[in-house]
Length: 221
Image 1 (cartoon, rainbow, N blue to C red):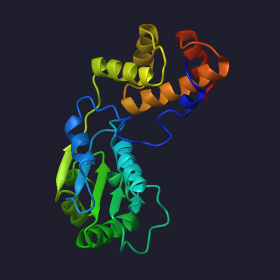
Image 2 (image 1 turned 60 degrees about the vertical axis):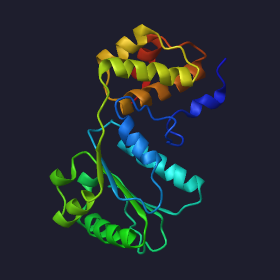
Image 3 (image 1 turned 180 degrees about the vertical axis):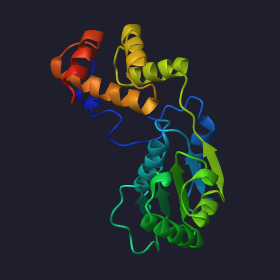
């Protein structure tokens, strides 16, 4: 029987155990072996392939080991004034950084690298194609550059089945067919849908069926 604790879903704390690595095993293995002082790493790939989840997993592991972390993404408004003493510099959404964020990112990258901190960054494009300053593009391409790829339909089905089983859910073929035909087909969107559907089914004390999925989608904004 499912326990209510499963309702927290994937969104609670990103980690490596909850990342579905099918087709991206090399990138995941490289990140799991990173330690403070490792060479810089840059992840790139289309939206929904898991870049932010993996950055979040690095962040969660660092905090678990009581290591200091600085985080930057396109929504970061208050940029840290100092990076001395940090062990991890994590930067997401590189393609969308503002001029001020680009200026800070370049300075922070140089300081962090000189101090022996590890830098892990991510964006939708490879470093050479990012619409940002040349000096930052070159820094992001210095170390290990890893591409992430979205899952194909067969692997998406397998991934969603495995995630449903991890949560103690029964996800029938008809629900999978409906989701893959009518909704976004990237892993981030589909696992987010599964998270919402799990909560909705728990609230209504009903199994996961296509009629219930339709009802939930009709009620969402």
